[in-house]
Image (cartoon, rainbow, N blue to C red; front, side):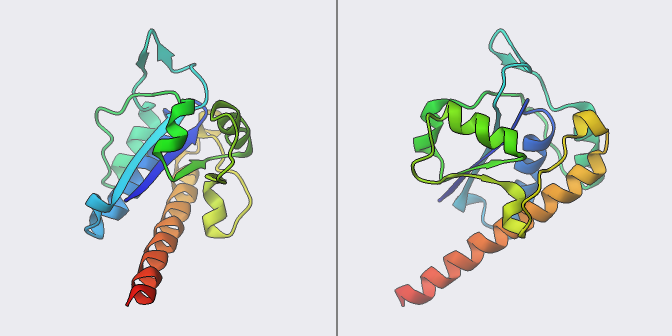
Length: 164
């Protein structure tokens, strides 16, 4: 099983978009049982008295344009104990990497990475909260998620070949 946690600042825009985009890719490939996919925040700004805010409406609308629903998703904060429960913590930008590493009390297993690194890019997924460009964020996240899925699928296939 591949256990993936997407991470952004508030868990209402980019990381839930990534969570549901990858879930769609996985479902389209019939591999839902092989993945645990979730998302979280490095801040508590979108969590009030233990209850997280829902996905930001413009992010939700952008997902719906592509046939993706995120109903029921509410912001949650990343916790130190998550480190042992996930294989990868995929961050949207450099600040998320820094904050996630702090929350997780380090990254001794090199599990914390930026999403666009899977697509061969070192850049950040720009925060549409500030730019209002949810279409650009969607495009970047889709590119990263497709590359991530391809890498996992190729790795699994190569593992099968070596096991034969």
